Image 1: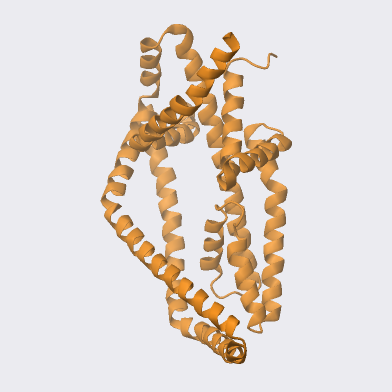
Image 2: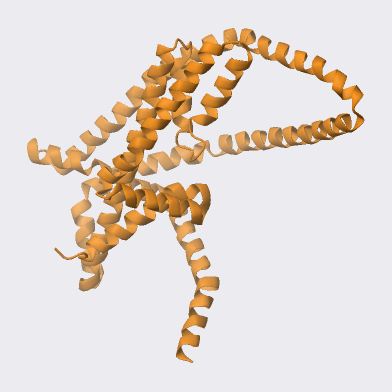
Length: 348
């Protein structure tokens, strides 16, 4: 009877309480997202702030301001340099785009001319083609509407995004500046046994999460640099633009750089640029091998986990949550490891 009651309670909790709890947590994080990001940025900048306060004997408020200026200023400077070069390549690409479109038009025209014979000879095939073309037209129309609505949504969200960035930067400064006061206030407000324990767990989880983000940033940066350098070596005109695009796609699980490389290489082979297509395939394989070889090791090195544990977390996450589980799995492993470490397990 007791076991049955426990099972019923667990079932009701899983069906009713846990989903509501997840919704509440998600909504809370969404509303407080500027402050959550600010806490992460403050933790990320803490080593640099500590360096200034200890080595230069700088006050903590001054160290916070200098650290934010150096890091964010450096990021803005690098983005400015990349944007300048990117604009030059995009302008050049827009001018020379017709000469790239012309072979595509000729290929499609030739394919249509060759397909006319089969179109008229086989009525069933022609009906299927007409039906598929109608479906494609509807899908394209739907995509166009979706893109237009998305652009309007993005445009309407710009003021809110700017306000969010400003709030995040201000909150980051105060989180860094008054870190000791906030910790002291937390310890006073919470009961003594749990205050320190929760604080330790939060520190461990946040530190491990930042380590995971740092590991992913290293891998994505490596992929981007490999792509840019490789494209320059094989003689691509728009190496920086395409390399940055490949780096952006590297964030996407499963697809990654393949979403750019494989269609590009396939079109090069079809259009007669066989040597260039083969070079693209070789470059993609090189980037893929390096990524697969280093991913588990880099993540494990930053988190202090065995590569097999990281690999298992990614696989289990994929099975449980789908593609997003490749990210969720390691994050859950990080949280579990950090919580156990904060609770003093395993014992030395």
